[in-house]
Length: 282
Image 1 (tube, rainbow, N blue to C red):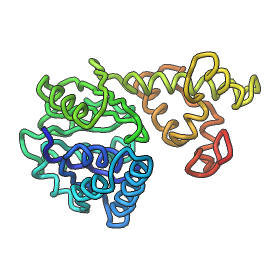
Image 2: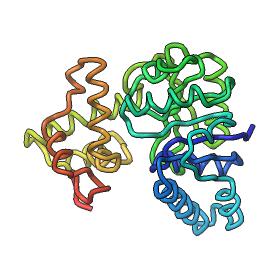
Image 3: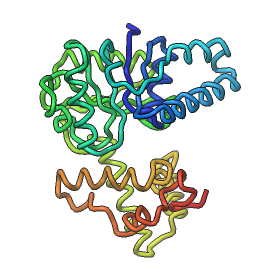
């Protein structure tokens, strides 16, 4: 099936999606707002592929072949000939609307327009296009080259053909797909981690338990590979705060109201691993 993929957004998620698609034989256009951003994306891909090569999982020829299938651009018009477009920009509805309005005008009528959002309803994103039936959620997990899951989300108007096409694409690039049949805020995985993480933050905030002990309890008691607060640090305090706010805005469900501690950490810049400090020091 390998065809042409356009990835909009060259950050951690976008570059990860570009990498696994290129490794699977897809021709990939990686687009961001400036050359520095796309160069950072490709440098990250090169480093990631290099690690796989060092471990003997792929050859140096495979590395060069995958990199050879990726084209950098700052021009959104480059998505015009793509079979599938995956949007992986910042989790703000206004920014995603801007991208999808433009893609609606640029892309082929038979193209699949996918969003990598983790919490914004797909229907809200699709609403600004004249082809909501062609819009689908493809929620990949970070780091994309390592994580096997893709949460496929059917928007209110997503057609069966679009869903089937997105599923075939995700499976071809090596992912195991779960299908979310109803477009709810946060889908399934983000709702589960947000509900768990917000309660974990509340328990730490109230002085009931330390962050380390809470994570140990989840790892040893529930068999989780990583505790919820370590997961918050890995994902980014700001990213999880944003996701939870989006769910709360949509549902008014108190369990998704972000605790003050999380809000203060985000304001203070303690964002987790990327800033060197979150619930843990890095």
